[in-house]
Amino acid sequence: MLPASLDEAVTALAASPAAVPVAGGTDLMGAVNAGLLRPMALIGLGRINELRGWQYQDGAAQLGAGLTHARMGRPDFAALMPALAEAARSAGPPQVRNAGTLGGNIVTADPAGDTLPVLAALEATVTLVGPEGGREVPVSHLLTGLDPMRGGELLGYVRVPLLHAPQVFLKATGRTGPSRAIASVALVLDPGRRAVRCAVGAVAPVPLRPLEAEQWVSGCIDWEGDRAIDPAAAAAFGDYVAAACVPEPQLSGLPDGQPEGMDGGPGAAAARLRRTVSVLARRALGRALK
Image 1: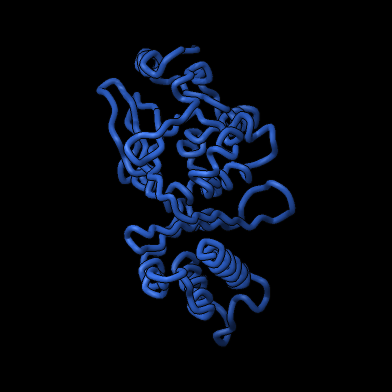
Image 2: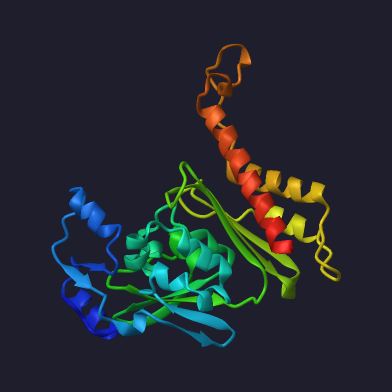
């Protein structure tokens, strides 16, 4: 089925509840080709032009769910939402960025999805459209299952507040070039509220907001002056974020209290991940404050 409008897509899904919506298909078709998914039918969203653009709306940007990563990586988009643009540019090789969409990234909810921590840090919301109309839900509520998609609903739009302030996205991968994140950090400044917002991706099933670390570091910044911060405070912030987002491994069953990390086990992996997150958070804060 190839609907030409969002309303037609909702109607098609209501008529065929077992059908699976598909936009870029970078995740869905991978699952189909691997034999992990056999949909009864597909509803192609690629012809719905209203979902492929973006526009200003009351101090925010309304992004169509069909907006591709390649489009989000362009300079005009990056000028307003630099962290989201950087996440889109790092989402994969060109063929993935040209096809993959923002809405697909959210609905698939892969823990390593590059745009997800940025949307969490920006406190974005989504518009879900179904037979009963549309409703707005925070991205964080959708991803955590606090307010999940209902039967017959499609993700139509993503609303991102425009802060007009520094934003940074950084990620660590296991190899050079575009690849899956081991850990990622999105950090944005909110001068209006004199606040720092941070989200860590890929280390848990959903992006994590270290709220206590955000509140603490916000009090260390000279908001009235040049937004300077003591280097020691920046380093402490990185450690604070890492400790909040990467839990200590279980050490039970080890002889004589031996740390599990000594033989390269889970303890060592957790320690490496903590260091990675700490460095990413510290660097992101430093770049945002420059």
